Length: 154
Image (cartoon, rainbow, N blue to C red):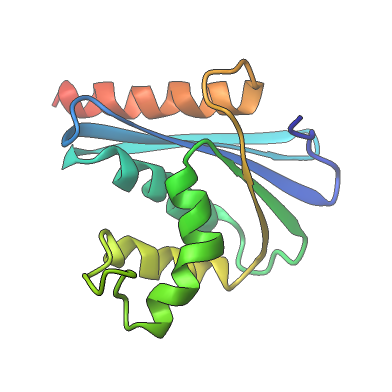
């Protein structure tokens, strides 16, 4: 079960959403540090669900103070993001950003950015089942959907 934020750890929930895949997409971030909370979201007109999942994690880590030295627990409901950043990325980098089939890694621009941000902090990457009633994940999902709706209304 996802843990609540302690006074020393930053807890982040991220989510991405897409209306069509590809199509208009949004990302959302819910952050907790002790009793403080921060939320933000955004989106893109023509994107994919995987890109929005990645953008949520990128924007979340960009929002962390560069001087922060505590623990970060980042919850995502995307196995693509979780496995990509904790498992697959090591092989991709060794192979010059090629996958095991020797083809270019999809979303390499975002993977490189996420890798750089991840290296600046102590991040514990965790998976949470989406749409399972976990408050932080539900809030991130709501924010991601707000990002989609904002893009669609432009």
